[in-house]
Image (cartoon, rainbow, N blue to C red; front, top):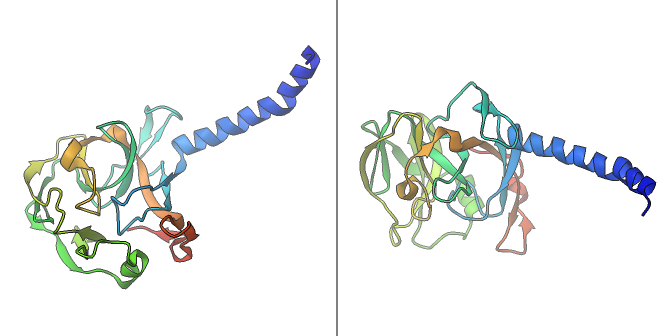
Length: 229
């Protein structure tokens, strides 16, 4: 290949592709992204095979491809579903914030208590049970948990408790306590401890698309563009 041919190939093909890749990469890094969910740690709220939308501007603005914050306008709130970098191994995780700085949090037989106030529990919404279908252990219990005026579904399995109880802990400044909604099948703050604010990358707000990985990747049409709570 001659030098003129190389220059033409660079100008007409390589450079435009690099520009597109840089723009898309910067957008996903700093503004908005999606996250595939391969595990059931957030069931029944998020199912395996869901692809969720991540709002990277929910809390702050960062320089693309770095963790450097240019500006910040909010902090995660109790009940937010967030994407974070695991303190254990740096992998991206999707978890729910259950404790913010200054909170005193405890778990009593899978019942959440925050600042001395016990969360409320009641029957799960029919839509949640329909989406979950038979994709849960026969001994699992699905309920609606309400804390600080925000409600969402949780699932526990009395036959395989992972850590159904922990004593009151105070969340330090600049750190957060996160848990999965699938309380007995989640690797979360009960195991890797508090999460630094800088490790929280954005808020998960919506299921964009969903496929049933246990049934030949059939689309779950009813879950498309479903807001998360």
